[in-house]
Image 1 (cartoon, rainbow, N blue to C red):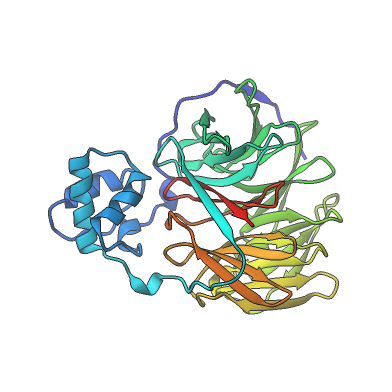
Image 2: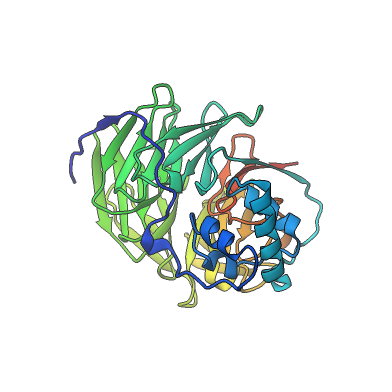
Length: 402
């Protein structure tokens, strides 16, 4: 364990939008044609051309322009030329469409485009005052949205932070994981000041508050689980199984961890920091996110196998169900609301939001309007609605469940 000096930092300038080199896939050559150079120059300012060649595509220039407008602001002449080129060479891949299931539940999905394009907005969370916060990972910022008015405001964080996840505390402070500068940070919205707590783990990832007042976090690449005591600044970190990812706390105080580098779910003792592991069948299984029902049963996404599952900690029994869009649907984010499971199929276009009722073992699903960007994390609001996002297209969303 170690004490960490707290540093008050004034808001800083916008970080570069380029992602870390290790996160960028190799560039892919584009076909010849009018607009190639425009696409090459403008689209690769935030991602490589591999993101285009591997995408599901759109068949009309209008559809390409719609999604381009959420990523970059261009003059009409350039945007039109690029959209026509993309529609010609990268039409929709119909095999990527989700298998949408009808049902009786009604929802309304509201989406907002964040002010700074290219920031990769993600991981929205609700603060005690009802405002919605998000991280702009590539721009090193935190954003605040008033869902009643749609008004948005962005706060600059340390340029190297590249925040992955945010979790508000009871006083309205916004805590984030500094994924690129080995830190846990706290933003005070009233003053704009940032306090940083340095970690040994290089890449803090996801975090959750515990009833004991501590913040528990994962570090995926470093394969570390951590605990921060905000009262003292003391941080405890332990090595663990490869790539810990999602993290949640049950009603008894056990900290549950999803592992994206192995086929395991971990139960972390909040005091001793010892981990008990539960193996999920099939070595190919990888688990990104998990949630808890009213009986503290652990629900999870089996991303690589196209399934969702439930672990009963009392017996160790694991039950799994096939997601409606099949083995390549890649379930990603997950939450449980009133013992009903909500998650997304990130391998499909448009990205599908899925509802699973365990009592009837029935599915229902909807296409997310913006359709592209991948929901990587979700948050349940006080009103038992769902916060979502589409990171690539810079959208923050609210799912009103009727």
